Image (cartoon, rainbow, N blue to C red; front, side, top):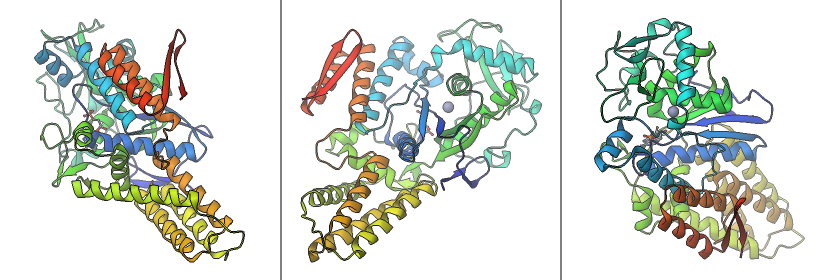
Length: 462
Ligand code: AMP
Ligand code: ZN
């Protein structure tokens, strides 16, 4: 049985999607004003693990990840750089896709951008307005929290007040109550704006996720995820908006990843204590070791980033690769004491059971290494039979599929190729042809040939 800790109920609950065999998943994406740091990627990798796990368990997953391409930060950064907003956000969206590909993340089915969904957002405000949840003040539109009984289900108010680093709208607008939040911000000089029934303006941040999740996944869907800092106010307000518009709670299961820390503090742009993926690659890190490291601590636990930790991840990965090579070459005899195969099978069930229990990667990995120890000992003793060989092979395959880390040296998984091709397309859209060529070169170096056809990009292995 698969169980997850639902942030809404703060309890472990059996997983039960709305439609048998199908999961509709929304993961809050990056704000594309800068390069994402590895704290952001801890959350994105947790989401990739979740998706791979569900696919491994036989579900088909419809996955939407938004790009926040308009907010105070993106506008400020574009103005600073003296470039149009879209030029800035295209550039960082392309870098985001590239980093996701480097880290071996499966692409989402849809990457909706906020600026391309203004009509949907306006319609959502209109639905809330019809139900009496909004008011207008000096050209801005606000959600009146007092109008919605049950506000605060995700994050009770006594907690919300104490949350560190919650991204609360600091802008000075005229609200009836300090808790009310902005849905539509009246246009200001130097900011992009769109026409609306309330006058020119731009959407508030929370609105995009409610509008775009409903558009692509329906008014009620299965799983919504993000980092823990998004619980309040972002996700609480998403629930308020959707309930205000449709009367229905939009999400069955809320999952939140704990933070990646540096010296005990949240890794963040504003504190300046961050590393980007590129920083680590420049120091010679293997992206798969970074992936392994960030996945090795269960998502609901805080995790401290250190270079010793990265070294340990590299060593663990090397052991896995070495074992895979030994497994491939070791001659298996027809005879064996059945205990070895049984032992490995036991570890394989433990691996699966740990993941089924709220994605406990730490226990799953320790089961994997137990199996490797038992296998190595059996090989050393010369009692390595066909049954054991098969069980160990299945376990390695399970690991590769769920953790998204190929152990066979040099071989690229199809999903990695697809993700890099997508990153190249994004770079081309952003007119960053040097980057697009670099990706083509990287693929070629890894034995993947691209062909641009009128129907799109085709690829084959050299
Ligand atoms: P942003 O680009 O700021 O919208 O953040 C993208 C995602 O990264 C969100 O889900 C955040 O909650 C998450 N995030 C930000 N900082 C960290 C961190 N230090 N550790 C884990 N996740 C983070
Ligand atoms: Zn969101």
